[in-house]
Image (cartoon, rainbow, N blue to C red):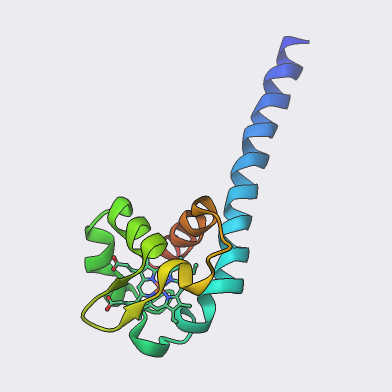
Length: 104
Ligand code: HEC
């Protein structure tokens, strides 16, 4: 019985992690892909390790902050939440994580 409960809670943790990864990918596709999928407007492209290296070096905190509040950098202008004010901060953070995970 105890074993079963351990297995069940491990499964729940796994499911929760998966939901977060899913949310990141969905948000990315809906709100970030237009620029970050193509490199439009000077956006660092998903998977372009060279373009992400120095950004990743700033740490997730800075990148999340820039993605949520928007910022003007050396290559272009990143609109707050990619222009999608309806997105939650958590959804934007999940999308940042998704992009970073695919770009290092
Ligand atoms: C209208 C185009 C556009 C959209 C849509 C967009 N971005 Fe960006 N993003 C940019 C540009 C341009 C930059 C680079 C700015 C610079 O460094 O000059 C950037 C940079 C970033 C960075 C790097 C920040 C840093 O500190 O270097 C992150 C993280 C990011 N975007 C996340 C997102 C997320 C998450 C979304 C979707 C919710 C999104 N972006 C949607 C244009 C866009």
